[in-house]
Image (cartoon, helix red, strand yellow):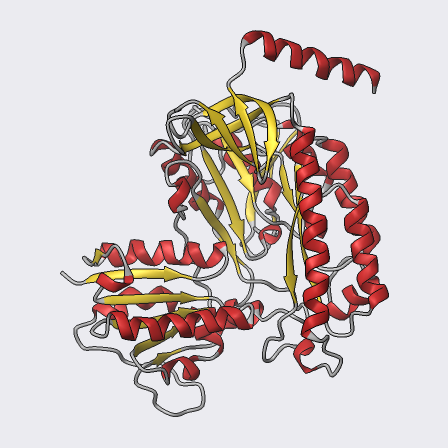
Length: 502
């Protein structure tokens, strides 16, 4: 039995693809190896969002040649889709399979007749390249991703792939194709299977998660006039409509057909209604998709994590226009303030890019000022990296590396200050957290509902939702203990008193 190992690079979507590939390889009878060094077949599932990501993939191929020269290497993912011939030219690479044909990777490596190319980029026959038109690609690989550190607690499920936006700096639409959604019934099945396997929190993610459902075909909806169907998570459901199996729609419902009527909010409601999942966490959602309806549901449901990640990129109107982003700084500000008003203690994060072509000191200052003013609790700060084929890469006003790095440092320091202040604001409160694993005999690692790392006094069982009293904040972590009844009552009294004053 051949052994394989899949090495994933980059974002959650790439990791999700890798999880789906692993499921396919095992289904075809291959055995998972513990490391690249021990595998007969190594799959490198690449990223290409930055020059550094490309460099990491090439370095891994060279290292494999030294450490495991007898293995066969299949390179797939975004880098493979963007520059297949570049990868195929590297010593040791057996196959290059783009995202367009990634779903056939297991079939390719197990085929008795060997690799047969389906297409070539320039008409030449390349015996080890399989790349097609990504915009004709309709497949969506989906399988839960299990973070090794949190393997029994927080699986990640990709429910959307691709992107229909055309940000001037981004290569992702050209390597992942058009927006595609995992059908609702499939999402429900996957989540239900995870719950039945013992998982208590699931993260849903996508390349452009807020666009989930827009590409799905017309669906049948029932508009309620007075009676609502049962929505208890333990009631058996019939396929498709989410109604109890014994329930028959009466005259109080009218059926209507509509096109592209499904939205992310519908998916979230369906997960909450049709599964007993204890906690649902929503990954990054673009500003224009944070509707009041979504914010209100997150704020009012105890089963949705109080955690909003809202990409910003820049707070300069001129820079956002050059980026071809679809919102303006004032729109963004309104969304963040709306989220904070609805959820006073929520974690709120953003992606911010520095060094975009033409970014002046004044434009960077606008971004720094908005970061200072808005109630962020963390930031992901990126330095612009030109990607071949994107409009921004062709601009002649590229920012010097030293300038971009200095701007990156400034925002990272500001982000660290904001996160420290957020941790400090939770001292003396009781927060919800899920236990991960025992760090030693004194502490158990946990993750709060706000996405903060926590060390809880005592050796606790993993995969438990607990309430923890925050004693103090340390460098990058909260220190807490399970509260006594008296502490819980006192904290509740303080919270109620504060709300009455407001």
